[in-house]
Length: 141
Ligand code: CMP
Image (cartoon, rainbow, N blue to C red):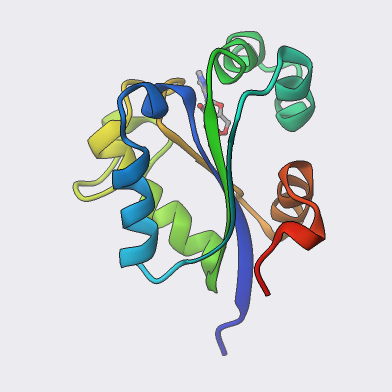
């Protein structure tokens, strides 16, 4: 039986700069994700480091957190059956060179770092990431 899940997605600064926000949100709706909450904001370097703490120590951590704090982002809470896996399929591979045709990263990502969109990779990270950006009362019932 498929279970209803929630996941956190971020339209990253590169995709916001390309005016891709509307196109990417349209993909969520066309693929039957329910938008529970959405906000445009900028995070600072420290907040980006907290969000990506799981990658601390990786060679790309410093430039990733610089990039994620370089301009506006759009964070969304999404809900669907199998939302986590379905969103990751819709996003495409982390490295757009390996992303399939029809995926968001194939269309909008520039490279493995400037890759247009983030999505939670598991239920525990989704819980952490949703609570990072949204209080419970901000989510649609
Ligand atoms: P995201 O889904 O946001 O999760 C972690 C991010 O780190 C990932 O997308 C990429 O943007 C980035 N990333 C992962 N691997 C690399 C890498 N090898 N070089 C640069 N950035 C990376």
